[in-house]
Length: 118
Image (tube, rainbow, N blue to C red; front, side, top):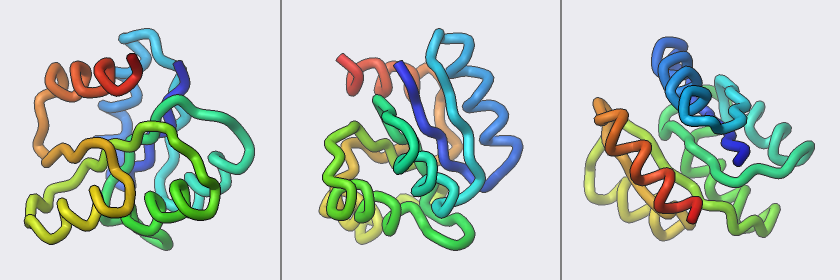
């Protein structure tokens, strides 16, 4: 299974990459939404894991692009420090399949990803 991870915080990106590789996933890691858009155009992924606040293109715009412009149905998990109800609702309205607030439990995130990839 191939996962695209889009996260602007280098430490979080490194930790996610390490954990997902340990679990046997193929991981493509990028630092912003523009890079993610490019990777999504070049390759197929089984899941998108994206942060909300990123340079150039934020997570909400990336979700909109995946669902509306690319018409992809891959599972999308939003990761963010913001748990405000309006942001959560917007992410789900745009097509996110799950929403995880940082800091998060790596074990919980793993279970959520496995559930979405069934």
